[in-house]
Each structure stands twice: as C-alpha cells, then as structure tokens.
Image (tube, rainbow, N blue to C red; front, side):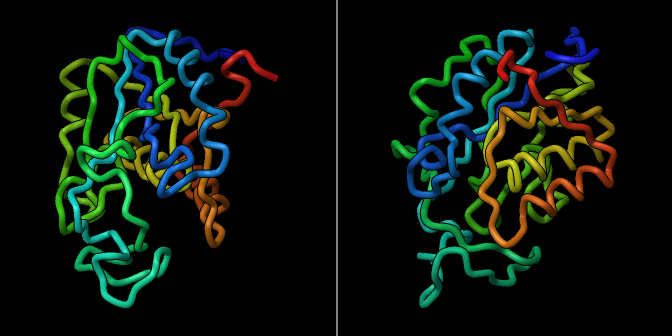
Length: 212
C-alpha cells in the first residue's frame, strides 16, 4: 500500500460482491474483471478478510421482472424508499451468484450473504435498504476487535458506497481502495458517490496494489 497506510491487526478488507453476474453477466459492471487479480493481490496484505455475496431469491422485489410492465433501471417507490429495478441477478444457487472463478482469497474468514429477504433490497453489507435492519456485520467486527475497514469490489457507486457509509456510521474507520473497485455509473451515480464519501470524510487510496 502506498503512502503511510500500514495494515495492522485491527484492519479488515471487505471484498464486495465479486460475482459472475456483475462480471460480464446479467448485471455487468464495466471492466469488473480487471479488478479480480488486483483484489487477490491486495488481500494478501490483510490477515482479516470478509467477502460479501449478493444472494437473491427468485422473484425478488428489486427485479424488474417481478413488476408487470416495468423495465430494468426504472425506479419505483418501495415501502423503504426509492428502488431501482434491476435485471434478475445473483439468484440463489445459480452460476451468476457464484464468486468469480479467479477470485482467490482462501484465508477469508467470513462470507456474508445479503439481499435474501424477498421484499427488501440490500446494497450495504451492514444494513438492509430500510437503513435499520442490520446484517450482523457490525457486531461481528466489533466482537473480533476489527476497527478499520478497507473496501474493494463491486459496484463502487452502489454496494461499495453504501457499505462504506454504514461502516462509518457504525463508528468504524473506513478507507475505499479506489483502484480495486469499478462502478456502474448511471445517472451521475459515481459523482454522487464521491461527493457523499467526501462529505463524510471517508478517504480513498490509489496505487495501493503495486500497479501504475
């Protein structure tokens, strides 16, 4: 890692949703495949790693196909607020929900599945999209004595962003590893992400993976 950022015993790498459907599949994030070897390399610097896995049941409320006459990327109002409708993706037990075949982090200590409640989406690894239902990750990190979270993965402007924000609000120190993320960037979502993270004082680092 460049600069004066040293990885210690209380640091954890949170690797977000590096799954087939986001890597050229049903909900492809542009250039997502590029980060897999970088994330693998980055993970070797951490003793503690947590992986998240989008894990939707068939007919999930966030799928456009669940709502008659709706198309992917339209927005509806759900009981918990605005909800973008997505193509069916990361359906439980399908190849699309599996981790990318070249993701190689054998020392990961936890796989956290999210988005399995049919009626509510879950971008953040810490809270469902109602911003009040916990996933249990904050408690897990607290009991383990892990106090600083580095984030990498997909997509920067959705699941990485909301995980970073909720980690910060949980009292954790947070760093986004920018070059180990990729974004969807729809409707200015990437610019909005950087503005939001800056407002919270959440830093990002680049060149952390030994690349140019």
